[in-house]
Image 1: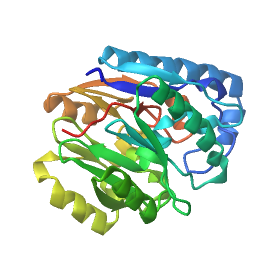
Image 2: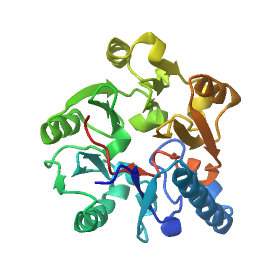
Image 3: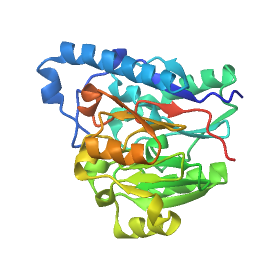
Image 4: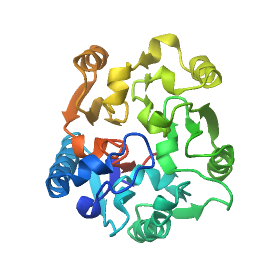
Length: 284
């Protein structure tokens, strides 16, 4: 497999905000000028794709499907590690139609040699892909979000399938409904996180595993701007338009921060990480 980072993105042709399954989703605001929002979403998606390519990564594009607007967020489609993919099971009925569609996408990825194996979770558990199961390469573990969307059984299914350490982090706010909107491990070993999204026990687990000087706290402003929902490629971090404070903190640590205007996708509760899925992650 190539050393070039490879990310999956889903064509945004069918992206809309027509329902609300998280507090950020604003179908009313979207409907007031849906055509303009669709055009803006296409431009934002293309800008993100360009930023990722400029950071040295390759982008594979999958088709979306009518009536499944959130397919544009492939981070929720699966957990991927070592060429193996474990497909998501969605909690909300609005997203369950994505499951067979993404199964087809991942079958094609196998045919292209980008993946070796695709599996499904047992019935009766919910686990919403890399959105709720983030790989920390420095520590060789998954951080697994449990709460609004994914269940403890889903996290256990990830541990069983990959034979990897999975550390559960309970999420306590519907506003931070997936782990990827409130936690982002970085290539230098730091972890960017928004403390108020987590339970007391989750914060204790995180702080036990990550030295204090490697924990970077996001503010409420950072989190609400979806800056934590970022794509880290080497020393480059691609994110929704960062606050000046956060850009400065990250640049002081030697990162290059690329801000992208992802406003149309924020109306659905997603940003840079949600719009991508890393396909080439491997254990050291």
